[in-house]
Length: 222
Image (cartoon, rainbow, N blue to C red; front, side):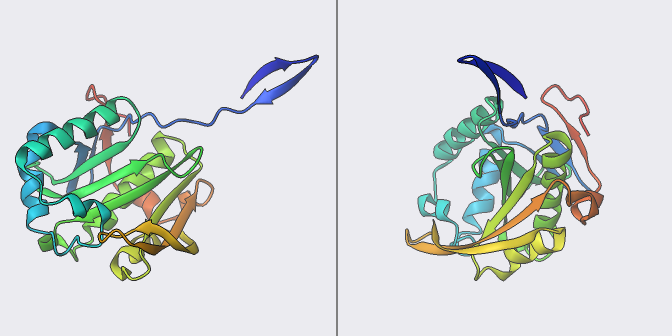
């Protein structure tokens, strides 16, 4: 909280907490979540190409399939945004990082001191709780490293599997907003908004998720 002189009096100027992106690599019981690198492009392309029908509801799938060169360029952009603390997009890998299982992210696009978590899992690994494990890990990072006030998860009301994840992790269904998101066909669709606040986080399943996290210099941060 900072003070600034205005006229002949004082007022408090509020500056919201900005995300730092300190957690470059996160290891859970079954997964490694880390900042994408351009060298991951072949693994990412293989995961997406094999899952296009399964991922068809996601708006970014409209740009698929992409060439390997396009994937390399995309991952360079992801890495640059991560380093500049603009957006935090993670690859979801198996523990030895030999295969891409999916993707996730901590996105500072839902207001001050808040972030939205998104996720997708390649088709042959769906149904094993891996998206829940990844979302739980980023929930802990959001509250315990980034010290945020609120985290949100958005999903289509028809995507029951996706909606089950925030419910299991202790998020609250705040609302279903009409015509607020774009689907893969470019049409507006409804969106469920799930939220979790810092004061409620310690009592949730997400708070009990086991993980370790390191920064860009491989220093332990959690």
